[in-house]
Image (cartoon, rainbow, N blue to C red; front, side, top):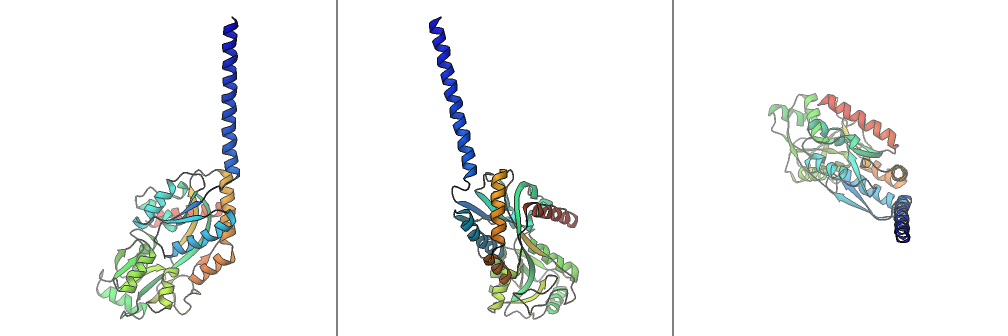
Length: 320
């Protein structure tokens, strides 16, 4: 009897120790969340280095580092007009250490057969808008939009126009311009706006459709000639370039950018990250870089950005 009681007591002690260990592990997890972030973060970008999305992500990452107290490594995951990077981001652990630049394609690719939708991400805020530009190489014979469109109409599908990827926003902008003007082009996809612009500069293609931040630098130093901005009004970085609407083509289209993380981010981590993103996007440095590039800086809340992304998903669904 005495031996049996000893065994029961021993089991009780073991059980108590096990519960204590579990409690300690739970406390450790809670502490880890409270102390977030405790290590460096990764910022995933769907497009190549040097483009408008990359510029936005890297500028914002520097501002976030100062606020979060941790380094942020920008990781370019290119391909598929944004599919590769967006898929990679949504499949990361939802622990707050993988964040990413989420482009307008998040509202487009799902309508093209990709398993990509806004609700697969924890959206932390919208940080910018970017109008499209149509440019030609500096030595191009086309000096005006009218001349360019006339050539495209004379030889349908013969004018090559570089874009940021099949199914991506700048291909959509190319198609939208063609539809409005009654012209058809030959779209040529690249892995982002930067390589598309490089193809235009080198003369590999006859024109390039890209964001204003991607084409403005090459235009200012004489490597590209921007024929039109597909925006509601002229942009500050290219004040002498007319809008397509001014030139008789009523086309307004562009990209936008959110910052997000995989779906299921813990509420307290989301709150801390969202506050940091809004602070970074509101900084003088970030706004100056965006404005100089021709983009419109923004700093919206997670709820506003989420509602916007879902409405854009519905809008592109109607278009497609």
